[in-house]
Amino acid sequence: MSESTIKLELIAILDEVFRRRGYEAATLSELSRACGLGKASLYHHFPGGKDEMAHVLLRRAIAELNDLAYRHLDRPAPWHERLAGFVDGFAVYCADGTRNCLIAEFTATAARSKFGDEIEQQSSTWLHKLARAFSETGVTEKRASRRARELLSTLYGALVLARLLDDPQPFRQIVRRLSDGFAKEQQPP
Image (cartoon, rainbow, N blue to C red; front, side):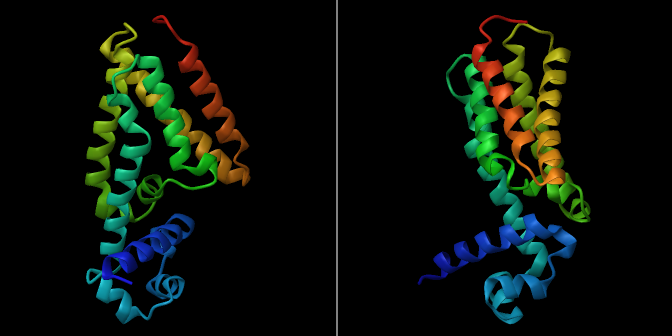
C-alpha cells in the first residue's frame, strides 16, 4: 500500500474521531488507537501532531462542502435550482443529519482559537455565494444577505437538534422543506 493511500485511510479515521469526540476530547492516545498506530507512527504521517491533523481535516471538510454543496451556487441554472442543489448537497455532507459538521465542531471548541480566522474567512465567502444567489430573486442586497444567514442558521440549527435528540428526522424534514420550497419557487417573493 502506498504512503498516500495509507495517509488517506488515516485521514478518514481521524475525521470520524474528531467529528465524534471534538477537538479537545480527541486525544493523541485515542487518535493513535483508532488508527491502529503508535503515537510515533502517527507523528510520522503528521509531524505537526494533533494541530496538523485538525488542519488537514479542516481543509478536507471545506473542500468536501465546496464540492457537495457550494458548487451548485456557481453552476448555470436558475437560482431556485441552485439553492435546492446547495441544500441537498449540504444534506449529503451531513449524511442526512447523522454526521456532524467538522467545521461547526471546530468553531464550538478550543479549535476555534487555532482555526477561527480560516473558518471565518471561508464562511464569509460561502455567505457571499448564497447571498448572490438570493439576490437573483429581486430582493435588496441586505435582504439577500439576511436570507443567506437564515438558510445556514436553519440548516445548522436542524443539524444540532438532530444531534441533541439523537434522531436525524428533524434535519431531514428541514432539508426536504427547504429543497422542495426552492424547487417550487419560480418567481421572486
